[in-house]
Image 1: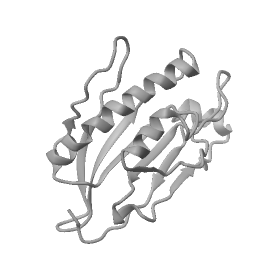
Image 2 (image 1 turned 90 degrees about the vertical axis):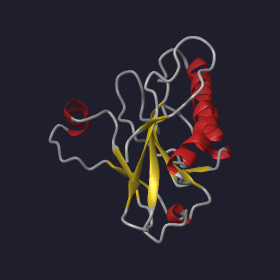
Image 3 (image 1 turned 30 degrees about the horizontal axis):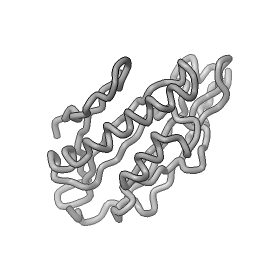
Image 4 (image 1 turned 180 degrees about the vertical axis):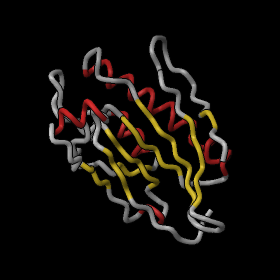
Length: 178
């Protein structure tokens, strides 16, 4: 389907969701599992951990508040949120807001997904958040692909592709339940 801009309400002044979230629906086929995907990129850690964690928390709150609108727009409860959360820990307020909003963080073990640099160590920035109560995602696990085959190692991978490893998760294809 066509992507839909998520109607988030801006909180406070200054930078807020510089990369506005959109939603798009995918289907495994007629009458089978379908899901709505919301890619995110929350506030970076530039500016200090305490300040940026607070902003990420506000960004997550705005997204969670908009979820009912997204579910109604697509007539679907199978909403996944994934991307660069920039959260340094599963205990950060942004992630706890998503969890309280009914999601399970597949990177709840804080597995590193970001390749260290001169400025920052390895970090568990990338998250896949699945609905806690939907059967399609009950067995979903996050996998981080670190095998890249570049002779120059991680630095070559970082330079040629990304400073993040690819993360994936499975979902069960079954008869659609919504």
